[in-house]
Length: 365
Length: 236
Image 1 (cartoon, rainbow over the protein chains, first blue to last red):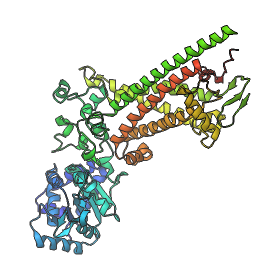
Image 2 (cartoon, rainbow over the protein chains, first blue to last red; image 1 turned 90 degrees about the vertical axis):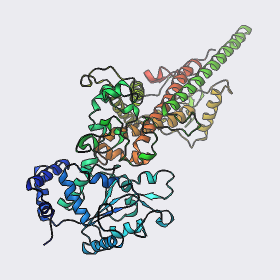
Image 3 (cartoon, one colour; image 1 turned 135 degrees about the vertical axis):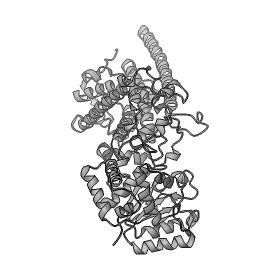
């Protein structure tokens, strides 16, 4: 008989009460109804445990660090043991050839059954030699493992968008997972790192329903990425009131005003930080007084300053590196205004001249 | 009165009054003026908010939200009026089309454009007389006003759409703008710069209208009120 998640949990000494708590919390964070919690309970008790293969490409392991700190103790217990049983570089005991053998074994034994979760981007330059894994270019390994996977998850901004490795000029030609694996839907869970509760909820959804969760047009699960940080921010009343932090050491900063003017990217960032928050719901960047840097958005590393509301638009040397749209616009208005005034003056002179010559003609007649 | 085809140049008099701008065109013009002014003011304030408004409790203050509501409401009226204007370009008289479809294929029209350009550069003393917009004005309307308006409406709607998820509701219709320009921050910048582009148009437009009315051969100012292009009688 194959082991279910519930069996695994009980074996680890977790009570049924805690198990039900986990199911209801996950159902709530997925935006499901009470019946949804029941479905999760049912799935966890009856469905065979899905093996998870977790690959690491070019990354900093912050996704793993985030994941193993998921707030509810149960979550990390469940999912961490589940993953270490299969394949995860950072947490598994095996190493070297042993680990690679284990990977091949999973692929053969659970063909078309396992979840492939990828942390980190792949690279294409020079045949992919800038990221080697088990003696092979990572993008080859990625294709190999993805071929028989049931679901593919991109953990974090590296796997979803490319992140800092893909920043200009991108010497290693770092690419996100969906640029390498094009024949399967890829579930993007961006963030640097993503919120741990979001990560566990996505895995739970895949297990419960056996299908990809509803995704938005960018391929992200709708339940966590359909609203901006800004729309659910607890500092939003200060935005609506027009109370802004002007500098990080001013009275407004002490009063907890809105960070819009010091470059908060909350209004352009889709993520759940302002609702789920971090460290067991303790805080999130804006709550600690720093604007959102938009780490879950594509290209966030190349968008200019984290501390400027309007980005720099002119190249260095043209009105200084700080030239914003306002400076450019106001200069254009001033130049046009001056040109119009000059034209008006010339026109007036011409008008006066032609009038006086007309008068002379009239006198002669 | 004889009028050259395409260019709208008055070839020879006598010049009688002509009804050029129908009521919907005039109505649209003034709706655009009335919404454009608050749009520029509130838009500037949204991009660069004034210093924080008082230390009062945020619960009772709603200053910045009012600025945004005014911006959004005016923007909706501005956009709907522009859509109506496009509709009128199709069903209205041929002057209603001049903004959108200048006769670029006509040699006479191009000649008119350069002749009017020479007049504005003081290279030519006497201007020609025109029944509708002169070709140079038509060109400015298309390249500056129409283009700017389309860009500002589309980018504005794309920014507005961000309150929905990707692929939902307004974002379904305007998400492509974010994809096209790369990211929402770029959409903001383009929207902001286009405001200045239209502001430049407004400055030149208002100046030209007054100048034409004083120095040109036709009445221009009153035309947008009563729709009638009146030709000033010759002095002798």
